Every structure is written in C-alpha cells, then in structure tokens.
Image (cartoon, rainbow, N blue to C red; front, side):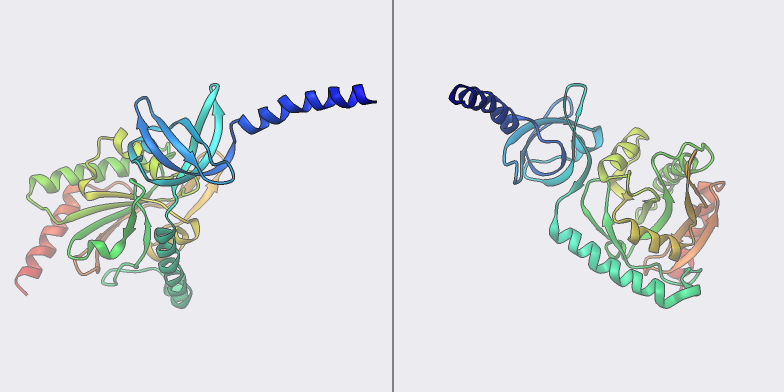
Length: 287
C-alpha cells in the first residue's frame, strides 16, 4: 500500500505542474505591456491567471494595441501558438457610458412606438458606441459638423450592398475634400456586432485604404444597435447563406443634428450627397 501511494504521489506532481503552467484558454482579461512586430502582443493576464504571456492577434487588434490598454477577448490555440480573438476594450467607464445612453435610447424607441423611425427634419438619435480604434464614440461629439451615416457589416459579400456602399462613402470623402468641405464626418455602424469588434472594423477600413481622420466605424452591444436600426429605418435578419439580409439607407445630418437628406439602397452617387450638403450649407448661410 505504501509503495502504491508513493507512486501515485510522484505521478501527480508533474500533472499538477503541467496544469499550473498550461496556457489558459477561453475568455480572458488582460493588460498590454508590450507591442511587438508580426502581430504579437505581450499581455499580463488578470486574475485568476495572473501571468505574462505572448500572443498573436489580428491586424486590426494589433494596430489598436497600446501599452497600458486593458482588453478582454478569447484566447485560443491557433497553429500551435496562443491567439487572441474577439477583442474588446475593457474600460468600465466607457462601457458604463455606452450602457447608460443605450438605456435612454431604448426608452425613446419604446415611447415613440410606431413613430420610432426618424424622418426628414427630425433629429438623429443620441447614442454611444466604440469606434474602430476601441475608443468611446459619442454622437454629440459631431455637433457642429455634417454627418453622413449608413449601416454595413464586414462579412457582407454581396458586391452591390455593403462593399459598394463603403466604396461610395470613401469616394464621397474624397469628393468632399476636393470641394473644400472640411466639416463632414462619415459614420458606418455595423449590423453584425457579435463579429465586428473594433479590431475587425479597423482591419476592414485599413484594407480599403479609408482615411479615418473623419470616418468612424462603430460597434457595441447588439441591443443598442437594434434600437439605432429601428430609429434610422434599417431592417435586417439572419440568413444562413448571406449571414444577414438587410435594407440599406444613407442619411445626411446637419450640424445641429437634424436629418435633411436620405437615399435608400446603395445605388447612389457621391455627387448627389455633396450637392445636397452644399445646397443646405448655402441656404443656412443666408438665413
């Protein structure tokens, strides 16, 4: 009996050491302590792991990483090494702001009922989300600027839907610059927030060579985006082959937050929106 107990004791020692040193997988919270080349980050994991590890991550998440940033994500094994995916900012203050403003948005949706859709001459809704850098985005931060807004998602493969709409937004951005319009901001809100993390949207924008100086790709809690879709007149539903089927609409908002122009679908021209903006600007100047 003593010999068997001693053998069992020595068998358990290496198993215990292995479990202590094994790489954790699943959902983790961490702080970035070093940003390396080749899409690698050095992280300090929060409790209960409390250890430093080096991971690979996606191109957008790597581009967004800064020393000291806290994040949360899913740690998996990919190609024999740790990989961090589904990365979100771990910022309680920002999350609290998003949730508080989101509750107000939801109350407005319920109170408006069948009139939830915001038509021409109404103000656009107040909201808060994360942008493609993982920073808090507040709709009121665009007060004093014209805003061009639509809804897309990064996995959309229909060439006449999201890819076409994003390209037209990019071309409108270029045309506005050529016409000397410097107070126009572009906003694209994801229809697929469970997949479109800030890093995914950053990679989506970078891959299309979009100038992010005045272009925000937004994501956040799905229930908040549902309320925004309702108030901005967008309908979407899951689809087994296309991920989502959805309507499209592109809207112009004036510097005081009032909707003044909208075109449904994705078959619009940059010139149509720039012309409407210039007319609105000129009319406002003589009032």
